[in-house]
Image (spheres, rainbow, N blue to C red):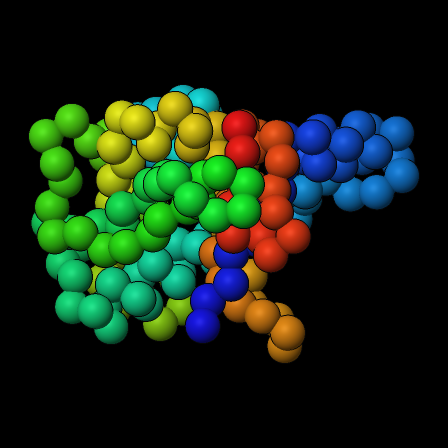
Length: 164
């Protein structure tokens, strides 16, 4: 089972302030964060580890990189009021924002030859997700996507919901 870890805006700001004063490292330190092609950094960003994991999962699920993609969304519910929703979709919807990541960047086990990965975000979810970085963590204790979201003000103890 995949685990979702959240980082609130306050936690992210505290980590960045601590990094500036030399106390601890930045939440994104050491990560190679990818910006979508043709977009500014205020949209959705992902790390190379997330790119690799998305490609592996898309191949396993039989989702075509040319037509399908990963849908990121927000839904009501969870301990803190909102929770993340991740699933594959065969095509974007009419009003979706479509982000392209990683074209020409080959990852280990990549069978696509470095084709771009598409991420779909509906307009309502974008309000809560803009500026977010999607990372993937794999340790002995857990594995799953991490949502490093500057719009999150509070998260629950189980790490699967947040409030903005």
